[in-house]
Image (cartoon, rainbow, N blue to C red; front, side, top):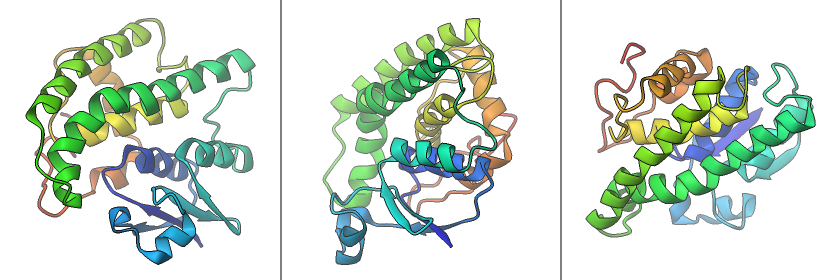
Length: 221
């Protein structure tokens, strides 16, 4: 049995979940309170981070390494192009969302509004929330620029780049922090990816004490 130890509002876990679902790999989802650093979890990943995937007799960590393993071993459907230049572009955009977007927006907005309360790490810093909400506008504009020239973020087919972006935006949408009216092209892109069967599990997520907004699971948002 393939098992994913995850946190529902972790964008890195969500990226792996989307990849597993798109490739139709039957997976047992085990929610992990990673901040408690239980001995069992630390044996799986001494760094105490999610996601952790148990598959093919291996215990794997780091979301992008997991996704690329899945792409290599379970190549259908493909989420990475074969052309080296196109693969570079996918990896560049994945890195942009996993690093820059996450640091400038997700950590400051979701991290302050929800993660701190969940983990008992203190009260939200309104200054950081405001910075993140302001900064997301720049990133939405950049996504719109990419989508002006492409059907998907990294080219004409859906790839891991789209999953990395959708994972970040979906957790922010859970807290109703995405202005979908700012860039209609980005909203159309998100509607396409949100309507995929692989996305259904994410739309069913519920975090106790933090209900999602009514539009969160609405495909016609």
